[in-house]
Image (tube, rainbow, N blue to C red):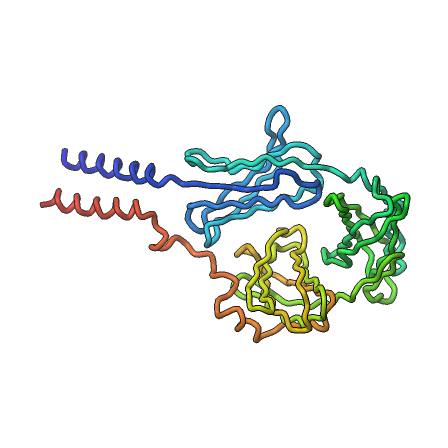
Length: 367
């Protein structure tokens, strides 16, 4: 009889502790987004570090249809992040949700409307071109007369070849430019105007590659500063450090894609900035005012499980190099400690109290 009461009391204590410290999840996502842009879902929770969380994207018609599902993990600051590729999705209403029950006052669902503007742009240059060292980009922007369009060009390996570059349009909304390329393959050209992201078009380059061509381009309206790049291996435990000798004026720095990179940099006033906006689909990028002084950067993957080669690109700079001494400017810590398991410090205090009470009751029952 004593043991039955003891067991019931223990069960009751655990139930009370669970209700007194309910788990919560709060997520955030943009209300509207252009098709083709990454849908970034961020969240906070009081779940333990390393806890897997399902984030699901649904298409909202008369009923909800699951489109994609991502499993993400709670980080050391009790945040999580999921990025969905919207390239081939239709415009319309969607929702992102963490499907869970018993989350109290949690906000675990957000509505998102995808907007498709790709029909506003017509590409007149061939979508399949024979390799000749140049990629021809020409077309017309609807309702964009005597204004301009911004383009970015991504190469077959996912590296950024050009941009962002502003090109003027004439009185009929027409534009054209040529970009020097060094290899055949599929190139993606993305377009943005004053209203925001318009869309992307793919151009395939075929044929044999001749002598390498330096990455320059010609356009009818402007020129572009040279882009310098450097490569290094990076992981969460072993970040890559770079020293960029800036010129004067605006300095553009961006990463390669295919890994969700985090950029940290220190400005001329000693302030540390952290940038992580685009996920693994698009490169991370920062704009810094150059003063002819070195800029120190640290780059590492957002996910603990990721590692690989990072290519850092910089425009309007004198030099970019991998550094073995810059790490001192960021302190001794790396991009983040390895994903820990549950530690004593992270145990639920209510459960710890229950354990102590159980021990006391057990000793009394023996006396």
